[in-house]
Length: 431
Image (cartoon, rainbow, N blue to C red):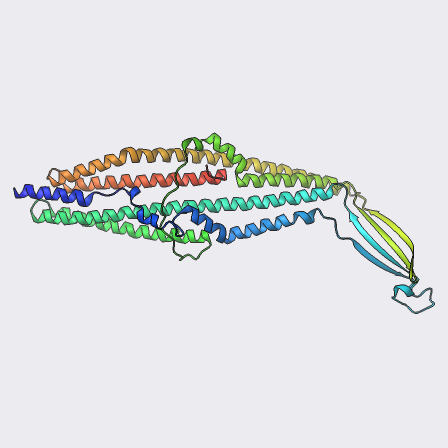
């Protein structure tokens, strides 16, 4: 009678004390910190956009490139020249440098005029270079945003893993007390108590390792944000929801990547720059002009006017043809680079889409099958242990299975997030 009563009490205590709440529903405290930096990806991205010095520098470079467009197509400044002629007036006076006391004074105002269309080509070259700089800035931001999203997902994984280990540690501490009580009553072996203590030591060791990894990821995240490595960060609150499967089909994403990928846009701008540079090089076959007007002063009055036209003669044909061949080669190189970047992006995109689908299926399998089965096995092992039908090792194995199932659930969700981050980086936007 006493043994039966003890078994009933043990069973109730085990079920009440050892049932572990799902990790996915243990986030109320984290959600309460949603307004602090680090709780959400959106807040981190906003902070990085405002603080990251590398992005700020690239943005200033793009602004500087945009300001070069107007000067590139402007006329050069006019030039003014003054000539004092016959400063001794045929030897009748000592040398004078006053316009009214020399033989005559010539005032020449000149303006350089490029051949028709050259100014517009120079402006278009500068505009294409500005687009390239803007594309490089967007590509760098795209890379930085991907690193922030990936680091956030890794921090979330560590946080959930740490939470799970703490729950297991609490579970093993309570199980140790129950094993001690059963040992004292002659219902269990001392080995049960020792194994419970070993499991607690292992859990504490893993918590130490997880804490070290979290500190490293905190330092990495702060560096990405342009903050001090020791600045505090909030606990990640939640992972972003995965897009619908129809939005992550390869054919749909490939078309969007061709249109929106920042690196591809930068390469397209490079091609435009090479095309306009080639056209400008070919236009150098034609001469540039200089025009001028020159009033001539005698004593105190203007008595003569002169007009002048000057042009350069493009005689160095060998040099000019070499420059033209150079511009053709640069254009071909830009097109080849664009094709190479496009092929690499599409290959990586196909790989990441396949990985995302695998992670999605793994997450569904773990959530719908493995986790419920592990929980059922765990509860069955607890009941068997309290009834004396199974040994302590069976309970530990069941506990390890449910822990691994929950850890696999978090791993699959994190893996899907990392694949999604890479897809967004390759596409240039969120699916």
